[in-house]
Image (cartoon, rainbow, N blue to C red; front, side):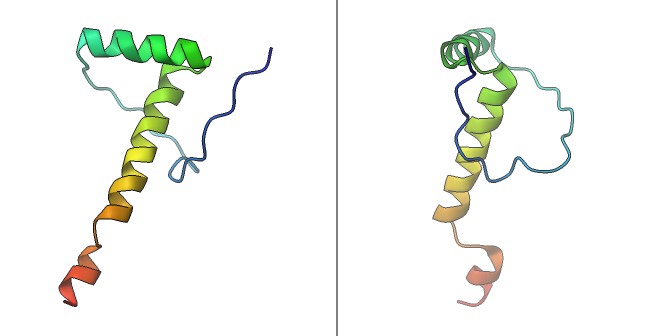
Length: 70
């Protein structure tokens, strides 16, 4: 059985950095369940969610350079 493909991620190329953070237990439980349902690792799920959010925010807000020219 092959692992389902991850969506296109814009910020996931290059070196990886180990990050440690505390998440609420109930949130981590949901993330683990979602990852298992997709046959992804929790790291793949969280990285994908953060990447898609960053892409969305970057598109919806003008850059500092664009704002300073107004």
